Image 1: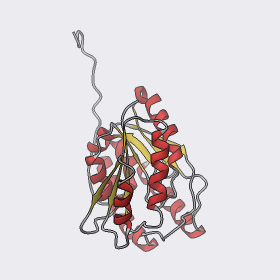
Image 2: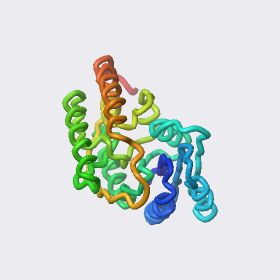
Image 3: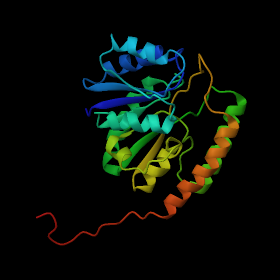
Image 4: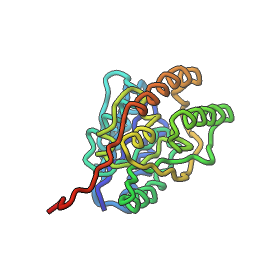
Length: 245
């Protein structure tokens, strides 16, 4: 079994981080001998960082990266993946709404489909546990994105994803890229499979994204990713006589 790194960006998740890390550790220990949990604290103003440091004393697989200034989810995600030792990466949101118990099945599917060039398994929150307004906004955003990018991904905003670290390292980096990971993987020639996952109510705290903030940056980013897609070609290699001898 390839080594696995869990990467979790966090910002002001003091009410959720301890339970989530303990869940991840319990899930991972039942399947993997070689795993790590990387939490990236994005300059939290509550005691998230202090709680993570306390957890580190009893969960040796936990690694912490702490930002001095808030940089956003994509930068936190990128820092975590770059620091990871695992061949495989599993990402989760820090609010506890993703269920770590879904990760083993996602890893199994990714490995089973390796020969088919599947490079990412994307979570699909088919039964979302959010407010009606957030659910509606997400459905509209996914529909617009799918129409423009043709990425065949019903829920690109789900933070629960499993992919090869090397695949991520070859993607173009930009702020807010985490919202477009399936499209970017497909742009590079890889396949993405969406898999239904559980979604849980947020127990503590509130979402860090406002509707207008999402709309404003989302339109600009969407147009940028569409431009990237149209300016990239995946070469098709020819088989040459005697090749490989």
